[in-house]
Amino acid sequence: MAEMLFYFIVAIIVFNFILELVLDYLNQKNWSDQLPAELKGFYNEDKYKKSQQYFRAKQRFSILTGSLSFIAMIVMLILGGFAWLDDFVRQYTSNPILMALLFFGILAFAADLLSTPFSAWYTFVVEERFGFNKTSVKTFVLDKLKGWLLGAIIGGGLLALIIWIWQSTGQWFWLVAWGAISLFMILMFMFYSNLIVPLFNKQRPLKEGELRNMIEKLAGQLDFGLKNIYVMDGSKRSTKANAYFTGMGPKKRIVLFDTLINNHTNEEIVAVLAHEIGHFKKKHTTLALILSMIQTGVMLYILSVFIDQPVLSKALGAEQSSFHMGVLAFGLLYSPLSLILGLISNYISRKNEYAADRFAGKNYRADKLRLALKKLSVDNLSNLQPHPCYVFFYYSHPPLLKRLAALRRLKKS
Image (cartoon, rainbow, N blue to C red; front, top):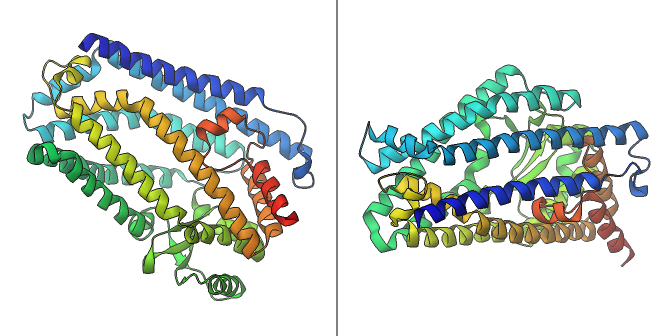
């Protein structure tokens, strides 16, 4: 049974890798040298060619790193690397919590060390080549160190808590663990911008002036209580622009990247924020959180059914059953269901983006939102014509041309 499970795990990994290659191939075949009429006047010929070159560079990088990850995983499975690491940590402790922390800590640290040269290459070569990178070497190194520290504290803390719950609650493990993780997700949703973001970026309240007045006026018209409007120094790392909404109740806030403010008119920025307010008014953010919590609950319930089965650990070559080996094997086996849930989540997300666009168009100005989306696409050198299959699998937002067409129809209706 363990041998059959091992081959099933290998088959899943191979299938996922081939699927990614096929989708990348389809996406590449969908390229066109002809600039869509909708974007004429925003893209000149050189800029459009540059966007395609950027896409090719990103795709080549993705295929390279994906292939190396695939090879590393297959080698670890065939040569019994996970079983060897399991034996290694058992030399130092027999405590299930400490074993799991050591096991996953070593795996995560080794994987990150191996990926760091590629991450540096992407940041300082690929992004630099196309004019996006603003990250200094110091910032890159500090981001890595802070990421390791947060991973150890938050990831390690959650893992230790889940194993303790598993040891203490028996058949109620999945339900108690679900409650604990759901509480953590809610707290992160409410306080992420207050607690985590400041470790990496500075946030300052938007200054008094025309833009703040326009935002507060729109919020008042839409009965959207908003006091927390912040500007983040996104230009510290990239020229790419963004804005996001986070939190709930009195903790909700809108965060604007300084690059968004620098590259767009006030009306375009307000249109983007009207879109974000639309997500809140239509409860998209709350529903996304609930959906994520439901998916977590489903995963934990299935995990609780199988985690005590020694065959999971044996499938990875371990002689002794353990929580950490069982979780690793389960995670690999769970990936097909995770893929399906991801497809559903992306489909819902794309529908919600259309709905938020409609909200902004009806309650502010569709023409200004269309203009902002076009500028964002040009500034970010977005792929204007992704393959529908690629969109179906990977996109949480509709492609630009689809969004612009929907906003045009809104204007006519």
